[in-house]
Length: 114
Length: 117
Figure 1 (cartoon, each protein chain N blue to C red):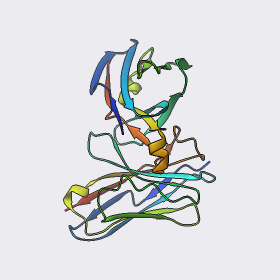
Figure 2: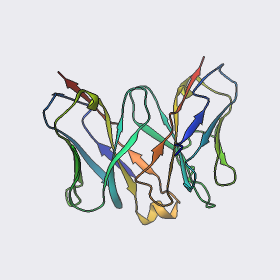
Figure 3: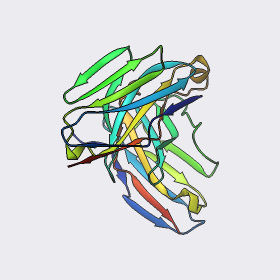
Protein backbone atom coordinates (compact mmCIF):
# COMPACT_ATOMS: atom_id res chain seq x y z
CA UNK A 1 0.00 0.00 0.00
CA UNK A 2 0.97 3.63 -0.25
CA UNK A 3 3.27 5.03 2.38
CA UNK A 4 3.53 8.53 3.77
CA UNK A 5 4.05 11.07 1.03
CA UNK A 6 5.40 14.60 1.29
CA UNK A 7 5.63 17.48 -1.10
CA UNK A 8 7.62 19.20 -2.33
CA UNK A 9 10.71 17.02 -2.01
CA UNK A 10 12.92 20.09 -2.20
CA UNK A 11 12.15 23.73 -1.59
CA UNK A 12 14.48 26.67 -1.97
CA UNK A 13 13.14 29.97 -0.73
CA UNK A 14 14.39 33.43 0.04
CA UNK A 15 14.68 34.65 3.59
CA UNK A 16 11.47 36.30 4.69
CA UNK A 17 9.17 34.32 2.41
CA UNK A 18 6.46 31.95 3.67
CA UNK A 19 6.51 28.25 2.79
CA UNK A 20 3.98 25.45 3.00
CA UNK A 21 4.96 21.82 3.32
CA UNK A 22 2.45 19.06 2.73
CA UNK A 23 2.10 15.60 4.25
CA UNK A 24 -0.26 12.84 3.20
CA UNK A 25 -0.26 10.09 5.86
CA UNK A 26 -0.99 6.41 5.44
CA UNK A 27 -4.71 5.83 5.06
CA UNK A 28 -6.27 4.86 8.38
CA UNK A 29 -3.47 6.31 10.51
CA UNK A 30 -5.04 8.68 12.98
CA UNK A 31 -1.79 10.06 14.40
CA UNK A 32 0.43 12.43 12.43
CA UNK A 33 3.76 13.96 13.45
CA UNK A 34 6.09 16.60 12.11
CA UNK A 35 9.83 16.55 12.86
CA UNK A 36 12.78 18.62 11.75
CA UNK A 37 16.25 17.21 11.11
CA UNK A 38 19.32 19.30 10.50
CA UNK A 39 22.28 17.77 8.66
CA UNK A 40 23.82 14.98 10.70
CA UNK A 41 21.54 15.65 13.64
CA UNK A 42 18.71 13.84 15.37
CA UNK A 43 15.02 14.37 14.94
CA UNK A 44 13.49 17.41 16.57
CA UNK A 45 9.81 17.01 17.38
CA UNK A 46 7.60 19.85 16.14
CA UNK A 47 3.91 18.96 16.39
CA UNK A 48 1.61 15.96 16.80
CA UNK A 49 -2.01 15.40 15.76
CA UNK A 50 -4.16 12.58 17.09
CA UNK A 51 -7.66 12.22 15.72
CA UNK A 52 -9.86 15.12 16.71
CA UNK A 53 -7.87 15.96 19.84
CA UNK A 54 -6.10 19.27 20.25
CA UNK A 55 -2.64 19.01 18.69
CA UNK A 56 0.50 18.82 20.78
CA UNK A 57 2.33 21.95 19.66
CA UNK A 58 4.99 21.83 22.35
CA UNK A 59 7.84 21.37 19.87
CA UNK A 60 7.18 24.33 17.59
CA UNK A 61 10.27 26.56 17.86
CA UNK A 62 8.51 29.88 17.34
CA UNK A 63 5.18 31.43 16.43
CA UNK A 64 6.34 31.56 12.81
CA UNK A 65 5.61 27.83 12.67
CA UNK A 66 2.09 26.48 12.45
CA UNK A 67 0.41 23.34 11.20
CA UNK A 68 -3.05 22.14 10.47
CA UNK A 69 -4.62 18.86 9.63
CA UNK A 70 -7.76 18.87 7.56
CA UNK A 71 -10.34 16.12 7.74
CA UNK A 72 -8.09 14.00 9.90
CA UNK A 73 -5.83 13.27 6.94
CA UNK A 74 -3.59 15.65 5.01
CA UNK A 75 -1.47 18.06 7.03
CA UNK A 76 0.24 21.31 6.09
CA UNK A 77 3.19 22.79 7.97
CA UNK A 78 3.55 26.52 7.38
CA UNK A 79 6.65 28.53 8.14
CA UNK A 80 6.19 32.28 7.94
CA UNK A 81 8.97 34.80 7.34
CA UNK A 82 11.54 32.04 6.88
CA UNK A 83 14.99 32.43 8.36
CA UNK A 84 18.24 30.74 7.36
CA UNK A 85 18.19 28.67 10.53
CA UNK A 86 14.95 27.09 9.31
CA UNK A 87 16.95 25.23 6.65
CA UNK A 88 16.57 21.52 7.40
CA UNK A 89 14.77 18.39 6.30
CA UNK A 90 11.17 18.37 7.50
CA UNK A 91 9.89 14.88 8.10
CA UNK A 92 6.31 13.80 8.51
CA UNK A 93 5.28 10.50 10.10
CA UNK A 94 2.03 8.73 10.87
CA UNK A 95 1.00 5.88 13.11
CA UNK A 96 -2.02 3.82 14.04
CA UNK A 97 -3.79 5.50 16.89
CA UNK A 98 -1.87 5.27 20.09
CA UNK A 99 0.97 3.17 18.60
CA UNK A 100 3.25 6.15 18.96
CA UNK A 101 6.30 3.92 19.20
CA UNK A 102 5.91 2.62 15.62
CA UNK A 103 5.87 5.54 13.26
CA UNK A 104 6.06 5.47 9.48
CA UNK A 105 8.03 8.32 7.96
CA UNK A 106 7.71 10.10 4.67
CA UNK A 107 10.74 10.93 2.50
CA UNK A 108 10.91 14.47 3.85
CA UNK A 109 11.07 17.95 2.38
CA UNK A 110 14.51 19.50 2.19
CA UNK A 111 14.07 23.22 2.86
CA UNK A 112 16.84 25.64 1.98
CA UNK A 113 16.47 29.28 2.96
CA UNK A 114 18.86 31.58 1.09
CA UNK B 1 11.25 16.03 30.32
CA UNK B 2 13.17 13.27 28.64
CA UNK B 3 16.78 12.81 27.54
CA UNK B 4 18.53 9.99 25.75
CA UNK B 5 22.21 9.25 25.33
CA UNK B 6 23.75 7.08 22.68
CA UNK B 7 27.26 6.97 21.17
CA UNK B 8 27.73 9.23 18.18
CA UNK B 9 29.67 6.73 16.07
CA UNK B 10 30.43 3.03 15.96
CA UNK B 11 32.63 1.20 13.46
CA UNK B 12 32.62 -2.55 12.81
CA UNK B 13 33.56 -5.02 10.08
CA UNK B 14 31.36 -7.17 7.91
CA UNK B 15 30.18 -10.33 9.62
CA UNK B 16 30.80 -8.96 13.10
CA UNK B 17 28.36 -8.20 15.91
CA UNK B 18 27.82 -4.66 17.15
CA UNK B 19 25.87 -3.31 20.11
CA UNK B 20 24.50 0.23 20.18
CA UNK B 21 23.61 1.41 23.66
CA UNK B 22 20.99 3.87 24.76
CA UNK B 23 20.42 5.27 28.23
CA UNK B 24 17.42 7.40 28.97
CA UNK B 25 15.99 9.67 31.59
CA UNK B 26 12.27 10.22 31.63
CA UNK B 27 9.80 10.97 34.36
CA UNK B 28 7.44 8.29 33.07
CA UNK B 29 8.45 5.40 30.88
CA UNK B 30 6.34 3.69 28.27
CA UNK B 31 8.82 1.81 26.07
CA UNK B 32 11.95 2.12 23.95
CA UNK B 33 11.90 2.16 20.17
CA UNK B 34 14.70 1.87 17.62
CA UNK B 35 14.82 3.38 14.15
CA UNK B 36 17.26 3.05 11.27
CA UNK B 37 18.03 5.86 8.84
CA UNK B 38 20.23 5.56 5.78
CA UNK B 39 21.91 8.70 4.46
CA UNK B 40 19.35 10.75 2.58
CA UNK B 41 16.55 8.41 3.58
CA UNK B 42 13.67 8.43 6.00
CA UNK B 43 13.82 6.75 9.42
CA UNK B 44 12.33 3.27 9.46
CA UNK B 45 11.00 1.47 12.52
CA UNK B 46 13.08 -1.48 13.72
CA UNK B 47 11.82 -2.58 17.12
CA UNK B 48 10.00 -1.70 20.30
CA UNK B 49 10.53 -2.93 23.87
CA UNK B 50 7.94 -2.24 26.52
CA UNK B 51 9.09 -4.98 28.90
CA UNK B 52 12.48 -6.08 30.17
CA UNK B 53 14.36 -8.58 28.08
CA UNK B 54 15.48 -9.31 24.58
CA UNK B 55 13.35 -9.05 21.44
CA UNK B 56 14.76 -10.74 18.36
CA UNK B 57 13.89 -9.96 14.77
CA UNK B 58 16.18 -11.70 12.35
CA UNK B 59 19.70 -10.33 12.57
CA UNK B 60 18.55 -7.49 14.82
CA UNK B 61 17.73 -7.78 18.51
CA UNK B 62 16.77 -5.14 21.03
CA UNK B 63 17.16 -5.31 24.78
CA UNK B 64 15.61 -3.31 27.60
CA UNK B 65 16.32 -3.03 31.31
CA UNK B 66 13.76 -0.73 32.90
CA UNK B 67 15.48 -0.78 36.28
CA UNK B 68 18.71 0.48 34.68
CA UNK B 69 16.98 2.89 32.25
CA UNK B 70 19.06 1.26 29.57
CA UNK B 71 18.60 -0.53 26.30
CA UNK B 72 20.61 -1.62 23.33
CA UNK B 73 20.28 -2.64 19.74
CA UNK B 74 22.30 -5.69 18.71
CA UNK B 75 23.14 -6.22 15.07
CA UNK B 76 24.56 -9.59 14.08
CA UNK B 77 26.25 -10.81 10.90
CA UNK B 78 26.83 -7.22 9.86
CA UNK B 79 26.41 -6.37 6.22
CA UNK B 80 27.57 -3.30 4.33
CA UNK B 81 23.94 -2.24 3.91
CA UNK B 82 23.67 -1.92 7.70
CA UNK B 83 25.77 1.25 7.49
CA UNK B 84 23.29 3.85 8.66
CA UNK B 85 22.32 5.96 11.65
CA UNK B 86 20.38 4.30 14.45
CA UNK B 87 18.13 6.23 16.80
CA UNK B 88 16.57 5.20 20.08
CA UNK B 89 13.35 6.91 21.11
CA UNK B 90 11.09 7.04 24.15
CA UNK B 91 7.61 8.26 24.86
CA UNK B 92 7.14 10.24 28.03
CA UNK B 93 4.21 8.66 29.82
CA UNK B 94 4.30 10.76 32.96
CA UNK B 95 1.05 12.21 34.22
CA UNK B 96 2.53 15.66 33.67
CA UNK B 97 3.22 14.90 30.03
CA UNK B 98 -0.24 13.45 29.50
CA UNK B 99 -1.82 16.46 31.19
CA UNK B 100 0.04 18.62 28.69
CA UNK B 101 -1.25 16.44 25.89
CA UNK B 102 2.26 15.38 25.04
CA UNK B 103 2.21 11.93 23.51
CA UNK B 104 4.93 12.06 20.88
CA UNK B 105 8.33 10.39 20.84
CA UNK B 106 11.62 11.94 21.86
CA UNK B 107 14.54 10.70 19.77
CA UNK B 108 18.17 10.35 20.71
CA UNK B 109 20.79 12.14 18.65
CA UNK B 110 21.62 8.95 16.75
CA UNK B 111 24.55 6.56 16.38
CA UNK B 112 26.25 6.45 13.03
CA UNK B 113 27.29 2.88 12.23
CA UNK B 114 30.01 2.40 9.65
CA UNK B 115 30.46 -1.19 8.45
CA UNK B 116 33.82 -1.82 6.85
CA UNK B 117 34.78 -4.66 4.49
